[in-house]
Length: 491
Image (cartoon, rainbow, N blue to C red; front, side):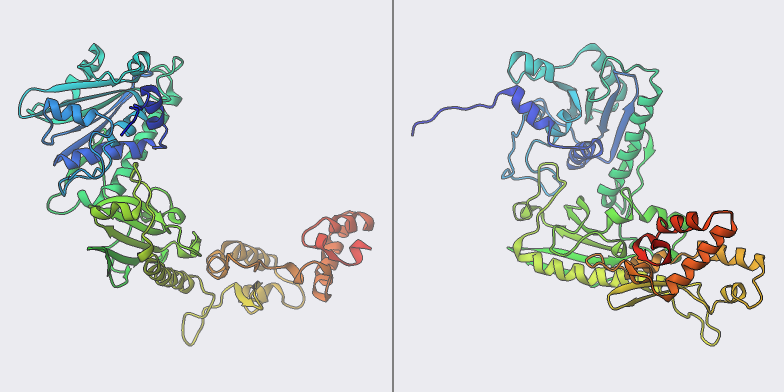
């Protein structure tokens, strides 16, 4: 065997790890993974604003590491995906700590203890690039050690991960009095809090729940399935075989807004909002990997009428390879053997979700004997949506009565129509894959009798308002929908 040793150049490797596309909340979640793997019961994420010297730390009371274990943890890919790991380990590639940290900061310092003295190691990317070597520094500079002394636990076990020289905040023009940048910094803390509550919700509930705080505020778990709400529909859970293990899939259909309080509705929308939170939620060892995605299933797209459909998928850690879990633990590709099953379950959930909204948004009688009359009627006919004012509505009839309408009735009718635009019905009945948008007066072409009558009334109103006949016709020619129709105004 003949070969060359082709070690990666440190600066290039750092640049590669730094550009993996972590968001700040996702990078912090990777650090929290390590704390949970170390069996920490208390985890604190600290955001400290100090202008260009601002810092972020993750502090836990886990079992900590020895000096040799710390060096291993700080080494890029020291443990590959094939390395045996305990059932509590949320890692996979052995690069999470480094890649997440390098994506957010130029200096990474870790201090840890596991029943003895505290050990400290630092990656300073300026040093790595200057010397072209992976120089893992013992200890850190005086300012960093001061921060470590301030935040590390008083016990003889635990770990502190500290980021300094933060990307985007270490620029020379960033000062401690920069209120705009400070506001942005703490907005990131708020986003991180919401993200952690979603990703680690299963670790924040139950008898063995952890304590997780961001800048002293307890992170609240977010249950995307509202599983404790009495109006949630739960489809039967399925255990799908995959190799020598099983994948558990359970679909949920959330209640419509009228069954939720405003606070429940707002919270159920999740960190990304209703549209982006529909779909599959993939969990690995109870850690959320992917939130709200249709997994690239053919024909399954985000549409508002499916907002209430959410599906939990629990995959065993041993099947990472089949699911294509990436380094950031933020995307998956379902195995071919399961795709048809996932597609079937998704279709069922989406149909149920659309039915819930359709029932809520339908324009139909709701009280037997004395039906409630709606101001709008929405129908689908010949592949087209039609939206019409209900001429049998009492207010509409009052406005149309012979001898002229009472101005108060007209104002009330206009207000009613403004307040009851049938958005929910249109959303549910609209088919995104077809061109079913309503066409005013049947669409472009010669105007029919009804369009001409409406145009004549507008024309007369314009003339009585002081416009000349020519100017009134010119105004009609540019007014929707008459700009697409042919009639007396276009001759």
